[in-house]
Amino acid sequence: MIKRPHPGYEMVLRNYRLDSSRGGAYICIVMVLAGAVLDYGLYPQHQLDFALARILCSLVIFGAILLLRTNWGRIYTPALTFFWLMMPQVMIAWMISVTEGANSIYYAGLNLAIYASGIALPFSVLQNLLLSALTLVLYVFACANYPESFVLHGPFLVNSLLLAFGGVTASACTMYNEKARFMLFQLRAELAERNRQLERTNRDLSQIKGQMLQQEKMAAIGTLAAGLLHEVNNPVSYCLMAIDLAMEEPISHESPTLRECLEDAKQGMRRVQHIVSDLKTFAYRNPDTQMIGNQFPFKKVLETAIRFTGHELKGVKVTSDLPEEDMVRGDDGALVGVLINLLSNAVLAMRKANQPEMKIHVSASWVDNRLRVEVLDNGPGISATNLQRVFEPFFTTREVGQGLGLGLSISYRVIEQHGGTLMAESVVGEWTKMIFDLPRAERGGA
Image (cartoon, rainbow, N blue to C red; front, top):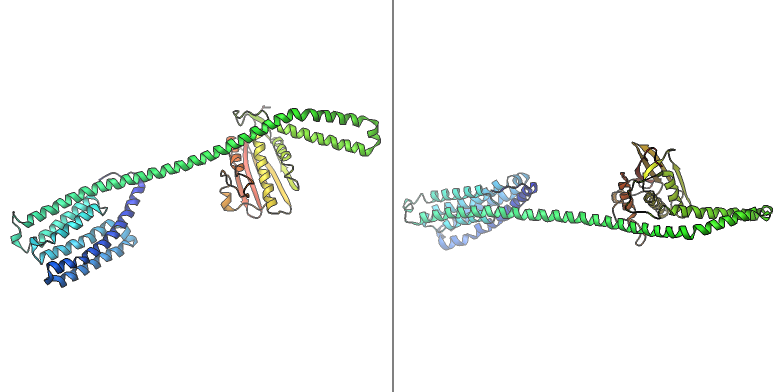
C-alpha cells in the first residue's frame, strides 16, 4: 500500500473506481454471454444449462450496475465490484464441477477475473489476494466430485499453482498501478498549481504594467509642469503687473466698462496662476519617496482635483462636507490623481445615463485616526456583477478607445500604499459611492 497525503486523491480514486467498475461490469456481461460459443464447441450436451447459468449471472451483474448508480452504490463501490466479479467465478466453478473437474479447460476462465482485478480494475492488494484465495477455494470444491483429480502429477496441481501465480502477479500489478495512478494525480495537481501561479503572475504583471503606465503619465505631466512653471509663470506675472498699472490710470476710473474688462482679465490671470500652482504638485516628484512623507490639508487636494476637472464638471453640482481639522499624511500628487479619477468616472457615468440633475458630494470624517472620505454621485449606479470587478486592471465598461480600465486599479493601489482601502458601494439606478481612508498627519507637523 502507498500513502496518499493529498486530500483530493481519495475523491479522484473513488470516482475512478466507480467508472471502471461500471465499464468492467458491462464488459464482463458481454464476455459471459459470448462464452456460449465455447459451450457449443466443448460441451454441447450442457449448452442449455450453461446458457441459463450465463443469463442468470449476467442479470446479477447488471443488478450490481444499477446499484452502482445509487448513492449507496457509490459509497460501497469496492464491495459491489468484488461481488459482481465473483459471480463469473462461481458460475465457472459450477461448470467445472458438472463437466470434467480438473481436466476441464474452463479453469482458464478463472484466471481472467484475477488478471482483470489486477490490471483493469483499481482493486487494493488485499482485495486482490482475497479474490485469488476465494477463486482457488472454488476450484478445489469444483474438483471435489472427481477424487482422481487430486494427484501430485496431474492437471489439478498445475492449475492450482497457475491460479496462485496469477493471484500474486495481479496483486503486484495492483500495487504498481496504484502508485502510477497516484504519481499521475500528483503531476496533475502540480500542473494545476503551476497554472494558478502563472495566472497570479499574469495579474501581478498587469498591475505592474498599469503602475508603470501611470508613472510614465505622471512623469510626462511633471515634465510639462516644470516647463509651464518657467514659460507661463513669468508672462502671467507681467500681465498682472500691466493690469494693475492700467487699473491705476484715470481713464479706467472714468470708464466702468473698461474697469470691468480689466477686472475680468485680472481674474483670468489669477486663474492661470492657480493652474500653474496646482501643476507644481506633479513637478519635480521623486518616485522613490515614501507615499506618506508629506503632510497637507485634504481640502487643498480636493480643491486641486476639482480645478483640474473643471471642464468635465460643467453642469455638475459639487458639494463637500469636510471637518475643520483635515491634515493628513501622504503623497498629495498621487491623491489628486485618485480624486481626479473618481470625479471623472462619476461625471462620465452620469452623462452617459443622461442624468437630468448631476450631483457629486464629497464628505470626510475621522475614524480611528484616519480620515474616511466618501465620494457620492447620483448616477446610474453599478451592477452587482461589475461592482465586484471595478478594481481589476483593464476592466472597463467604456467604449473601445475611451480608456484602458486602469484608473480605479491604480487608485486602489495608491490608497493601499497609504495604508487604506478603496471600496465601492452602489444601488443601481440611484447612486454610487467610492470610499477610502487616509492617515492623520502627525501633530506638530507642517
